[in-house]
Length: 173
Image 1 (tube, rainbow, N blue to C red):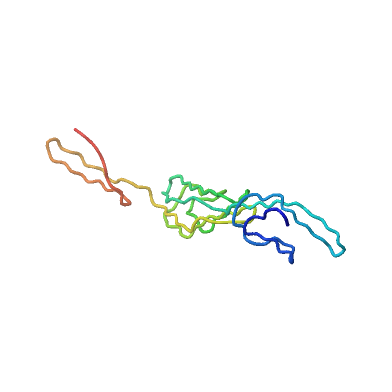
Image 2: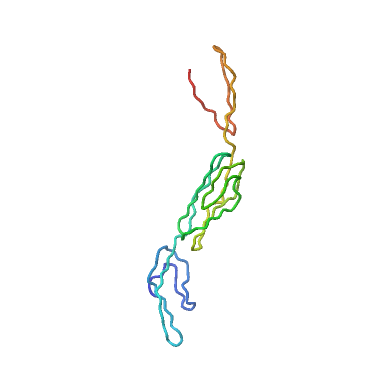
């Protein structure tokens, strides 16, 4: 062929094929490929080769809380749209996956390991984010029902925070 092939590709005349691994993305135009048969008849065609960036999946899945709306959005760079999204692993109860997004409201406490999100390009390249874990905890609660106080007597009451939270407060007299 004449014209510039993408870097990393070469024409193999014995096979009649362009082979290799492209090292640079872009559109490479005006590549002329020709053939001549045994009787001397020849023809050419002009082609364009487009090399897409590799598919990269970005995003992460944060931890969540039972009863609280949850969302984790993943994005894709490179490749050729449209993308096919796939989730591998088991999501927490109450969550679902569609179009690169995990969403819903978790209904059960637990640690959900070995989850991965894959995106496949229309051109065939794919990549993934993960594996990762999603940890779902109970909502933080503050327990306590302080007793009545008596005027001019010392008073003390200690609150407890479920799930390891820190009790804070303010007040003035």
